[in-house]
Image (spheres, rainbow, N blue to C red):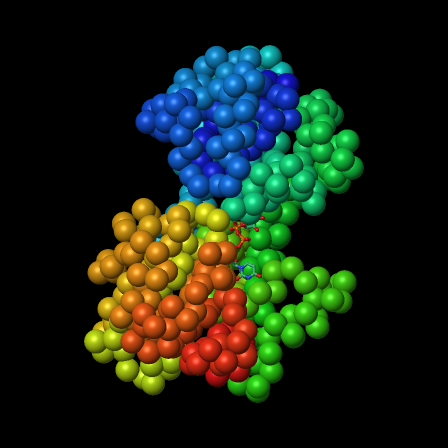
Length: 436
Ligand code: UDX
């Protein structure tokens, strides 16, 4: 199959490289000439484990191309994917569809022969209808079917998620389009991955319903963590105790500083808007959004408490700035709420992140960025773990203790054990477990 992928952001690039690896011929298209030049010279604009190798192999095999010129690729494509961004619209939280509609108009001017136009971008219910209307208006002659095919890729594990998904959702009832989509995902079909064909609107909603449910699940365990702290229970054991029930499931029950990232925050808000407009508010998700926002700020209070209420003139060392490990993405990262709250209370902040420093420098003011965790510990009155990078799981704690002004650790991801920390002489606070 011949695929044109519009947008070489996170989703477009990972999906394009994976489709090429499935054996299809894929052209990734982006307006950003600098990005395309970089990709053509072998440099990958985002940090995603394994992506550089996958891109290199498929470029070498002659299956993966990068260009700024959509014309040739779209004209010859069996399927044109729209993988552009749908950020939260400033002010009202609706998904901003400017890029989606711009891509649609560009595709409409070019398509030839039967073409399946697929939205990979996360778009509100009904967007496929709008895209179809644009084609009808601009190219009444075109033989096009608009399909929804949401992505469920976790940053840091995106290639694995693409190649071994729990399911693939395809929103179209048109038999020719179903055949193209089935062929595109044929390697997964052979693996017996469930491929769920639904109506387009249902498929669009599945994406939001999935992300909102996961955000709700995380928020639920975060509230249980607060309750555990208040009543002297252990949230990790609660999570295990409930997660072993197959109806609940053990995944996404890690308590922490609140969810962030490029999807959950914007998708929950967009779902809230869609549901209100439809006259059926999703109050559970409205509450989830509110509780999660408050939680990020509340994490700063844990640090204040660990220093007995006074941050004035104190040095706070922060380990981990990205919204989760194995990514350089800082979008809606808890660190962006926690660090300014600490600075407002008079703390000096020094921080390190293995991949996020480049972005963090643009987003965080007044922070001293360090080269490794030990530099961060040096002279710190408290050390705060915000993101659970693997390299923070095996720190030389004796060395950390010597470097710090006082051995105080706030572990917002529960990567250490309270009893170990007590034995090593740290004052230790974590999430949903007794402080020592
Ligand atoms: C998410 C979805 O998982 C993916 O299917 C989707 O389509 C895109 O959005 P991603 O944002 O990359 O992926 O990260 P994910 O691993 O889902 O984590 C999201 C946030 O939740 C992170 O801030 C993470 O730290 C937090 N989280 C996750 C928890 O706090 N606890 C958990 O148990 C799991």
